[in-house]
Length: 419
Image 1 (cartoon, one colour):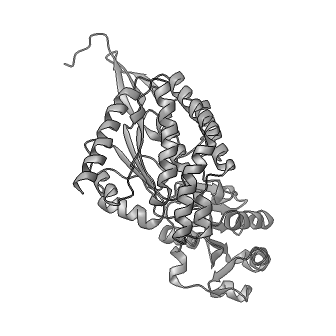
Image 2 (spheres, rainbow, N blue to C red; image 1 turned 45 degrees about the vertical axis):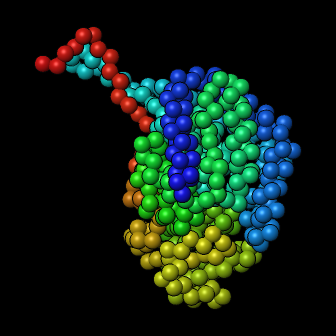
Image 3 (cartoon, rainbow, N blue to C red; image 1 turned 90 degrees about the vertical axis):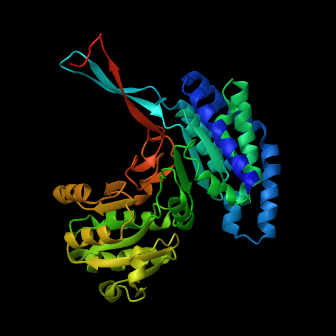
């Protein structure tokens, strides 16, 4: 334990030193590092896949599921996706040093706000080794040093990817300690990491609810998180029902295992009889199991009975809870009680009801007439994201470059003194 504590503490100390050096890096140098890393990923594909095969062999030996092995695999497509992702981040505006606004005070002082890096970010994540590159690229472009602690099942892949990024840092004269991977699979390393508030400014856990709750309950450092995505689509009585049908099916079946997939469908009683039997057939064709309230089951005979646990369940599977509500007020109450502050959608042609939904629903993204699947940094025009936050301090929703910065006040004077 003492050895691990020393190891992790030294990594954090070096990250803090690197973060100070990053503040003076030009956008040109940052982009050069990102593009060089992208080039090296493509060039060293054979090396990456050989290291990845060590993780895959271990995963097969341990009997991990086919889905998990798929997430672990650094295929040609995944490597190309990582490289392109870095090129896209390089093309984005650099947020560091941006002066957001300036105003003049009566005493002649000019006051403004400037974007600055957060400092050192530690990211704790599971399974997907491509997160190593995605997180490193976003943190580096936003001027932050990053400490990466991936899952034990991907240790060889993560170390190999970090080595390539560090080579690009070194060749461009940037501090290679700006991107570091914890090189041990011992879980004690996470416990140590969560205590190092002297060096680390923010923890971002990315994975299952159990991981995020563990990090939140044990960290001395601020944690940016979302526990789960219980996302709703509410079909209003003034909805275009064909539109509602397309949105509901897409929100559930396009990728059911992700946090922005719909988990509960709410339908206004006045359109339920016309809408539910039709959309239920769509869901049946896609292999979706429906769990409905009594009114739903009257209209869809094959739906199973929903229990109280279904209303706040994140299935991450082809299972959908369905409830008929007598009013919009009831829909809003249901979302307030069971929602997870992630993504909520209303389907309606009524402007005033749409605006009421936008104002009253508390979620990181609230939508009108669109699939919940659009809560994604790339889809919202942010270029990329490091995760989705359902906490309001300091970011709410997809976290991209701007959300990986804070703002400080700047003041220009001409010799003013306070009387």
